[in-house]
Length: 366
Image (tube, rainbow, N blue to C red; front, side, top):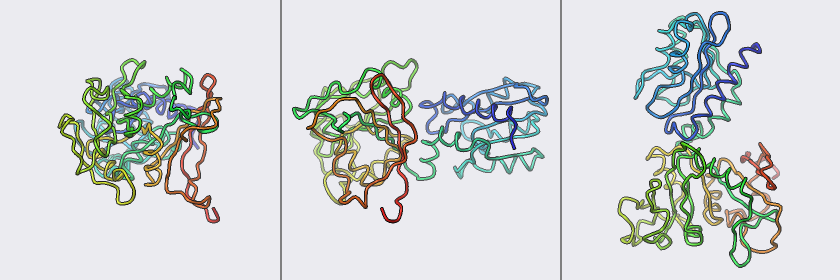
């Protein structure tokens, strides 16, 4: 059983890893803490940006000679390959650490094997300390590697009776400034923000991150099947961040800059584009996490495709009684086919409530 000091070291590594959210893609977020031979902290670090030194390297540099004979606590199995940086397993071996404790195994076939390399060098290796916490902190990258597509977080804001706008289409502002600021945090942590043509027409959104110093701007994606919603001069075409307009293969898109047009096949059933083709195209561009911001028709298409990994709902203590719902047709025709969710977190943001939930496998009898 791990000691309190070991748990604290790994928990600190998990906290450090979170600092890299939004800046490391297509790499994972990773944190590392090194305790010297006497059990005192000697160094720490996290993966700060893609192409830069990994967490272990930052921690080893800070620890210096005190790493020799010490223990490295890492949130993810140390890598075993040479990419833009060298293998961390080799760096730990050369630094003379005697023990490596990592939380989650690396599912990337190009990088896995670090634990075996360390063991072959005579280093004691242990896996699984605070694995659930570390997995949660790195869920976007782990999901993308395991499924071969970007992790998708669907965010919506609604009244307590589930309306995202009033009957006359007015919607600003349902939620509070605190909730809206939190959405910018989600944008800053995502590789891409995706909206549909309805949102583009109604709101002319800019989709950039605001109010977060040093934040990386995500790729902005508008799913505009017929290429009719985004017109020249739209805010999403400004130079704040790169943009893609996803249109059907047969759509007339001559009014859009050629470099922003992403042509995709139409969905086999129903209107819109093939969601899996969209996600595959984004994954091929290095996108590992997607923030799906709307609207209800596009959200329904993602749910119907089984392509929503997490739901974050911002609920305001407001009632409208009429107006569009947060989710349109998702291919669910009866209660037995309802997508059941496991609520993982509830947080108060000003007057509003943020609820985070993840789909759970369908149970027999549902």
